[in-house]
Amino acid sequence: MNNHSETGNSGDISAYSSADTIPGWNKELDLAFSAYRGSYTPGRVASRHKTVCEVLIPGAVVQAGISGALQRIGKQPVVGDFVVLLDQPELGSRVVVNILPRRTCFSRGAAGDGGGEQVIAANLDTIFIVTSVGKDLNLRRLERYLAVVYSSGANPVILLNKIDLADDPARLVEKIQSIAGNVPVVSLSALSEIGLDTLSPYLKPGETVALIGSSGVGKSTIINALLGEAVQKTAGIREDDQKGRHTTTVRQLFLLPNGAVLIDNPGIREIQLGDSSEGLEKAFSEIVDAARDCKFKDCTHRDEPGCAVLKAVEDGLIPEERLDSYHRLTEELIFQTKKAEIGLKRLEKEKHREIAVNIKKYKKFTGKP
Ligand SMILES: Nc1nc2c(ncn2[C@@H]2O[C@H](COP(=O)(O)OP(=O)(O)OP(=O)(O)O)[C@@H](O)[C@H]2O)c(=O)[nH]1
Ligand SMILES: [Mg+2]
Ligand SMILES: [Zn+2]
Image (cartoon, rainbow, N blue to C red):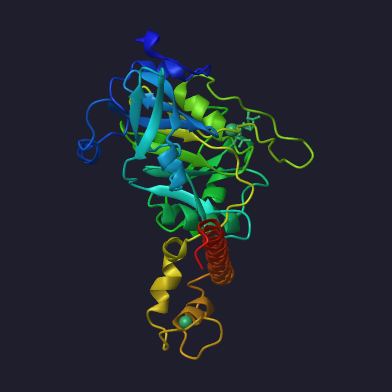
């Protein structure tokens, strides 16, 4: 069915062409889509560019614009979204006219002082948080990732890549496990193809897995290894600082032969917490559990008498660095929330000003007082 492929030049397209359904499609989506008839078809966003999306439809990948109505209400289709397409054969084009309900939603706090969140991928079942042996391995950063991933609704799994470079990978896994709670930690080497099989429980047909992490940790190399072909470009680390070069620049969806979906992401420099209070609670569940026995309901676990968390630290049950981390991230979250509120207020003020100006213009135009 290769002749159905209409766009794209990347090596992954052929992988789609054998698909006769949309990977990840389920009964709920069927129900949501049943409201549409006639010239509407369902699809899944494979990659997103400024004004167009590449959309996976049964047996092909097509390009589609984004309807003006969607843009006006600020609804942005993202990679992984299941969408409703309107065929316009007379114009020879398709447009995304709606986004079907998202099962999970991975966002990050948007840059800039307006606060708010930016959804970057949708309908993910699992998120592989990828780190690698060497300088990238940082427990504090992993805690932050865990909080953000938990708040997306997807299940986190931590991947320690490049174990071919480690003397004692088991010790590193143990170190990571100490902050990961029940989150699985998988060690592997994508380059030497060690440990790739351990990922199969997360790569079931119809399941969607996204890979996130710093640039250069090997996300694209893992995708290539799992697909068994070099669909994604990968690149060397600069010798001097071990920082990656941001080789992947576009977020993109790939299909495994068994029908599982992989999403490669550009490297993340620093992940903002955004609206992750629930995620933070999950990422620090041992602190939240201990806090149930604090004397005061609003205990901040800093210096209050009868604080069960401080007691657990004293008794060596919770490492002090964990509590420090929890405090730091909680403060950051409070700061982010305040910033977002200020941003919202300012937006509202601007809107009022705009309305007042429009009323003035209208009065001038009609001559009404
Ligand atoms: N030694 C070793 N090197 C690896 C391994 N996996 C990846 N690399 C190398 O690490 C470098 C970066 O890999 P990429 O896959 O491009 O990293 P990435 O995470 O996709 O980076 P961005 O696209 O920039 O976010 C490449 O030179 C890979 O060959 C591994 O298991 N062991
Ligand atoms: Mg990459
Ligand atoms: Zn306390």
